[in-house]
Structure formats: structure tokens, C-alpha cells
Length: 113
Image (cartoon, rainbow, N blue to C red; front, top):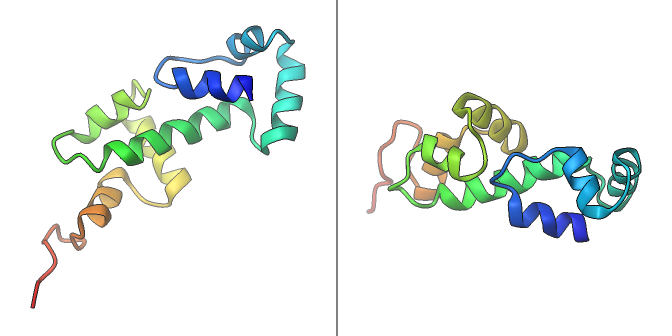
């Protein structure tokens, strides 16, 4: 739980297993083993999940560009952000934003009868 909280507080910064292990006062190998047993994810996969969840919340704000959402979520490379986002959600950040706003795939707002 301590490492999970640590990740959630610092997900925007670059994080390594060594850093996380140091914060937990254990070896990287022990951290990986115990973290996987406790959460079902590796520490770095958990970091990605936390970042994607932050991006999903940020995508609700239409004033932010996809690049800004990626940066605020801890990704320096927008292409990598899009790749990871799609891996975890099954859609691109743009498609996710459209779905949130109710737009169809063409970008048109839904018709109101």
C-alpha cells in the first residue's frame, strides 16, 4: 500500500523500480515479487494504469490538447502516451474524448430530436 500511494502521489514524474524499491526499503527483486502478488500488476504496469486513469479524467476537459493531457499524465512522448492509452482502454485518447462528449466518429455532436 505504501508503494501504491507513493506511485499515485508521483505518477507524473519518471519512476523506476529502483526508486520504488528504495521508497519501500526493499530490493527491486523483492518489490516486484511482493507488488505483483498484492496487486496482480508489476510496479511499472501499475504506474501505467495510474497514468491512464489520470489521462481519462483529463480528457474530460476539452480545453486541453491530447499532447497536454499526455504531459500532465506523466508522458514525455505523445506517441507513446497514445500507444499505452490504447493498450489499456482499447481506444485512442481522441476516441475516448469523443465518447465522453457524446460525439460520433465523424466528430459531429449527437442530434437532439
